[in-house]
Image 1 (spheres, one colour):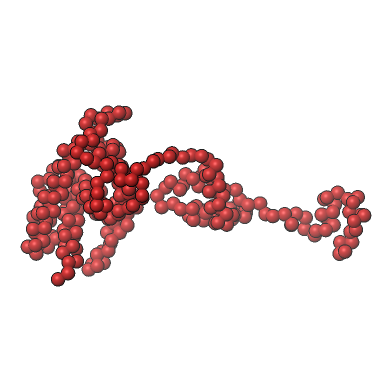
Image 2: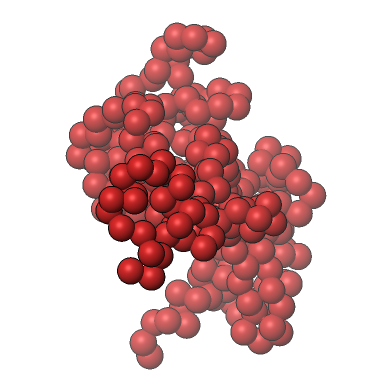
Amino acid sequence: MRAGLGWQQAQSLSEAEVEAKLFVHIGRSEPDVRSAVDFPWVHRELRRTGVTLQLLWSDYRLAAQQAGRRPYQYSQFCDLYASWRGQQRLSMRQTHRPGEKLFVDYSGKRPSVTDPVTGEQREVELYVAVLGASNYTFAEVTFSQTIPDFTASTVRALEYFGASPKIVVPDQLRSAVARPDRYDPDINEEGGTMIVPGHGRLCDESDVGDYRDMVTIVRDRVRDMVQKKMSLAQVKGARPTRDYDGVYGQAANSGDLFVETVYRSLTSATSAKPR
C-alpha cells in the first residue's frame, strides 16, 4: 500500500489521523459548498414584467462567483426553486366555465412596428383577450390605450371568437353597474354581457353603447374618405372625430391616433382583397 498503512495500524488511529495519512490535501475529497439561493427574492422578481428564471439565475451566478462561491447550474437552480415553491402552498383556485369569462388587458410590454416605406419605428400597445376556461387567446397591437382603441380591440376580439361571453373582466375599463358602491356594487346584468368592475370610475350600459356608436360612425366616415382616395394627412385634416374629441380625447393627439388606426386598418384590408 502506498500510504504504508495496514488494517492493524488503522484500528488504533482516529478518523482525522487516518485521513491525514491517506490524503495529501485534507478535505479535498469533500464536495464544494454551493452558494445558497434566496428563493423569496426569486419569487418576488418573477412577478415583474419581462423577468425570467434564466435572467435571475445569471444574476445569482454572477453574485456567487464574485463572492468566491460555487453556484448551482441553471437546471438545478430551476428544480430547487420549483421544489421550494411547491412547499409554500400559496394558491387561489379559480373555476372557469366554458364561455363564461373573457379577460382583457394590455400586456405591459410595448413592441414596435416598422414603416415599410420610411423605415421609421414606432412603439405600440399589445392588447390581449383570453377566455378563462380554454386559454384561447386573441392579441393585436394598437397605437394607444385610449377608450376608442380599447373598445375597437374588444369588438375585434369578440368577432374573432365568434361569440360573446357572459362576463368581460377588464383591468383598465370602467365597469357597468346599476348602483356604484365601494364594497358591494349592484351589477347590471341586463342585455347579455356583463362587465365586471376592474378599477377606475364607473359607467353604465348606455356609455358602452355610446362608445360602440362612436367607433362605427368614425369608421364609416374614414371609409368614405378612403374610397375617395384621400391620403392619411387629408383624412386627419378633415377631422372625422370632430364630434367626439371633447368627450373621448384624453390627450392632444388621441383623435389623430385613433383616425390613423382606423385608416391603416381600412387601407390594409382594401389592399389585401384579390383583384
